[in-house]
Image (cartoon, rainbow, N blue to C red; front, side, top):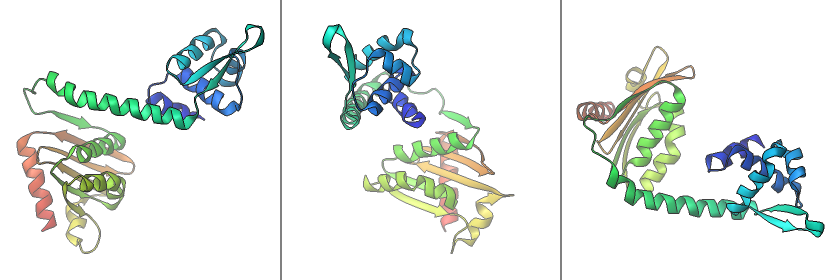
Length: 228
């Protein structure tokens, strides 16, 4: 249940809204506010406000029963997810056209450090997902496997992908070029416009993302050199 609540929060629900919705879905019958509060852990002082928000977003419906009692029934999960998908797609289409128009060009090439494995791999995924013409990747099998779904999507949209997987046959040179003292090198160059360079070892990660032209060029030449 916790995982479902967290995922609903990522899609825009508050914690209380997600708990209340999951409780309604799991009940199999309409519940009143008292029952929702008791089962979900949402405070009684805020449960009706929370249910009202679910009703406002169309994720639940009020059922007026005898003697003025009010019950709440959830929108079925499949319908809710499809509605969220449509709303997300609509927002993305709108932002793709409007957001770039207000963005000021950077005075210096964007550069930032990455201090753990999760942020490193997430940023690497960003570079792969943003590529429109070419990708250069040098990675070890662990990171290659993690990035492969995004890489396949890039290939389907026509991106030319050149990849080196260190430590595999016949790439014996990769054993030396791609790792040092147990660390694993990761280099992802997108459209020869941006690059992520990092290392991973024992669950830790570190690296840098930049659009600095000189660094991007050096990284592209490095990946090309390893491939040869």
